[in-house]
Length: 154
Image (cartoon, rainbow, N blue to C red; front, side, top):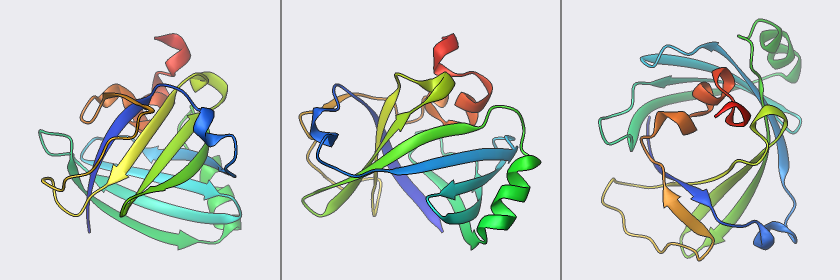
């Protein structure tokens, strides 16, 4: 149940125009870095996720996720800390990997982040031309941080 991912800023979103994204609303019940607890509504599905502390590199951390009913997710979002995240996620397949591109809305509008999940920290992959700088391990780009200190306030 380890999540290994790299995170990047995106230069432009022209490549997303032909794709259909899915709206995601998520809130946090805990933003303690050692045990972040997230509730998410992704389209018509609900999820609860617990994430552990990231390694020093920011690449790897424990992640446990369970699908819950949409009603349960809505009820848990009512208990969430202030600063609910609103974004649209697009998935782009490149070679044998799926890139998840999050276009943020509301107080995080203007932020676009791409993530790629990997099998190991050493897994090699090609960077698409729309990738800008890597922000893996930069806690400002963690959704839990953005819920407290939105991009619009930086």
